[in-house]
Length: 493
Image (cartoon, rainbow, N blue to C red; front, side):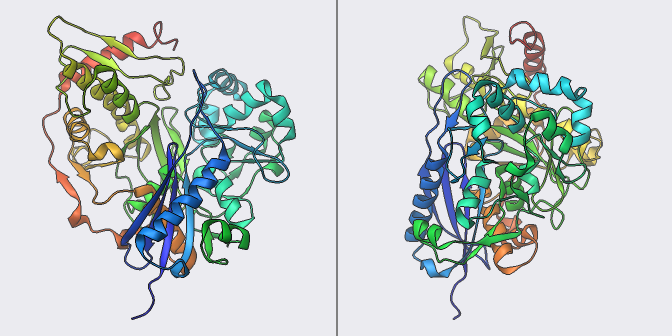
């Protein structure tokens, strides 16, 4: 029997690193190593030390190899998928000058507003980048840094995204990919490269940025001897450019030019996202018009408050997360960290509709409803961005793929099912971000389209299929009305 060929897909997320040790031929998940991250900050600040990401990557890879029982010598490739938008500034030695500002750091909301106006409004931004600046985007964080920590901005010898930083540590070469780069605010999806006018607007020298590889699966280097010693893998193995976490999840699902196009996905994690791979370049101000890792596009809407916010409400109520009931008349918008979609960075949580007979279980159910409504609200706009008519019965019957940690929770699944009225598919297996990264690694090591690789690994017969139920229009309209009334005066929108 020939020796087994193994690849490692790394998911470096907000809260932790996961390293998926994967059979490069069959896609069998042999083991997942894990290591936690630390997030600090109060108010709108959310930061992490990038060095801890590197340490977590090393620990997760070692744990995954040990658990899998395979020899490290069997590993032929590695790729990193990372949390999007984070701002990493490095000195000349490649060391962080300060903690990284994370995607859910909302301090740059004023800079987002100013940058939007400076270019001529939302339409001018979507025409170039596909996205309107919000506090999440890297460009707004860079502008915040220039205004609030000018010493660090002036001293920066390199500006990176989280996955760029880790990939550069692996190879010693500076690369990013179109997918993650498209979430910066200085990359143009119209031209497929950095936009000189936007860089000038931001006072950002393009020489500080990594080169953009053709795709996330492009082999951008080999594992250096130093990195190999640090993470316990063979020097010289293939390292792919890698990509952002949402782009990697799409690859893991087999979404892209060599797979499914214009099929919506809803991800329930720390953030809630709805996205699809499409050949149509998105230009909607209501969405983030990202590029995908494989050369297609990935229109996406992202909310800041999803599973973590609902779990916080459960903790406040002293309830288990599954001890719920439908919200009844109560509406709870769990915008505990401000909100990105809709763009309400100064928002806080809102509870309304309380009655004498409202139960704690209903309050928790209302938190689920508020979080699910917020991300589902963008689904029709997503479909339009893909060139589809949401009112078309065939489009309405297209199943919604449900992924992320919340997809394993009964209440999350039933809440999405009830509020969407759509058939659901819950893909078999987990760790889709890491799985997508593994497909990128396999492609870099052995060739082939990464989406086709991932699709060959997946067996749709293993997926959980849920038929539609009648849509809960009353709850939908009640939550929507509460949000509409509150968005201006109460949330500072």
